[in-house]
Image (cartoon, helix red, strand yellow):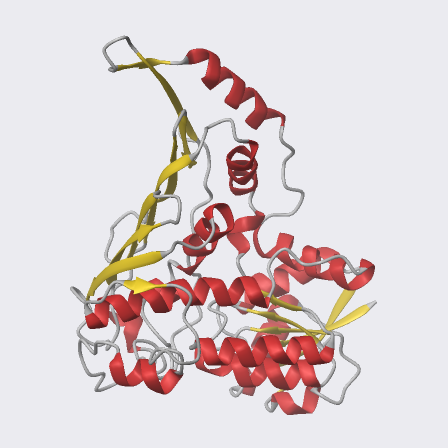
Length: 386
């Protein structure tokens, strides 16, 4: 029986708690830590856990705990993760992995030294439509991928950035690109790999209580000539989100939509129903994901601990996602075309470098300590369009 602790009892912690409770024969939540210890106790009471509330997370490091979920603001991820790994705990960290590439490298080094698992939350990979789409792309049935379109559309009201740590480069580490589109950017990199270069723009059009962006667009070029575009937003009503991949033979997307074309003699398109049927049949025969979202990722980590198998999303993968996002921030702030990789010599490699050089749209002048505990949105269900 693996013993679990959770650091941070904000809204996202409920997803972790609910996921662990799906595997009560494999693990038990024994502690929840929060600087507001009453919030930790409220979570324990809410889920009727046989656990204790802890104010100082360091109390957990010497205890018999196997796995720690970190559900705190991004600027805390690196020190918490390093401390937990060095104390011999496996660690699951909420997105984004950290606030800088330097911190990612510190976290990965700690994982390597300790021999413990470090997994970065990217729960959208553990959804049936996303898993199926990845398999379709890998099958080669679409031909070479020539264009990718990612629409990470969310909507957050002005008061969203009133929370004390949000909306600042120092504590949140960025805006919608880092903290919302991270899910879709992770999926893009999983499916297509890292582009060679990126040109980006960003703005703050609706939230004058935040230093960070609420809208960004990145234009991508891959080594093979393929292009892509990623739009990150918290100003899109309806929160429609999609990933579209155009292959040389067909087009597929999440939410699932399939089109295939062949050329008439004059080069104009006509439907290719045979290829559409072949791809659809392949898609339909792929298995359903047994556990979706956070539950799927926590099952993946528990299985890795139990069997020694690798996790699907490790610290290397988490760093790649952050590197892409930092590329957007660097390009949008400097006007430069940014080429990957980004290493320690880059001025955007450190938190201090980002805080100094990233565009500050507004200065945050007031804040609230806490919001009332209400439900949050964590992304599309990616159901097939009817």
